[in-house]
Length: 141
Image 1 (cartoon, rainbow, N blue to C red):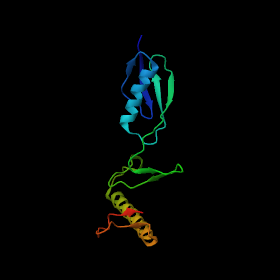
Image 2: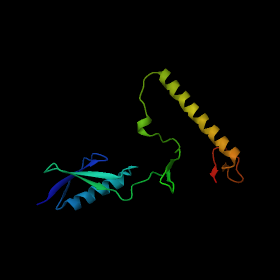
Image 3: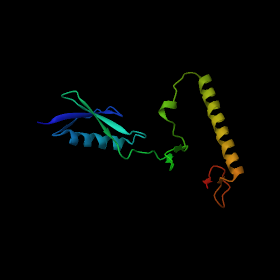
């Protein structure tokens, strides 16, 4: 008799997998987590639809987003990615005043980043690529 399984963590899936064993259902759910590329997900949870039991599985090689570097000591460094904004930082507000204040906040953040790059250049840890005068490109030494 086949059982039905659904991925419920780190995302709640709308797909239900009908398989002959828990392991086969978990594998299908794992493939869904893997294809979703959820950064920082170290476990995933599968629910047996028929018995309502939940099973937690460990992800041995969790996905690391392209904008993060893992350091040897286990630390993580996040790098800025162009125009990509994490969803938890997006705030929907109405009115032109809010838009203007958001623009000013972004300009302040940009100024802080420029100051950090200038300080790193002064220390000699960051420099522009050889032969370029573009201030928007740099190399980390």
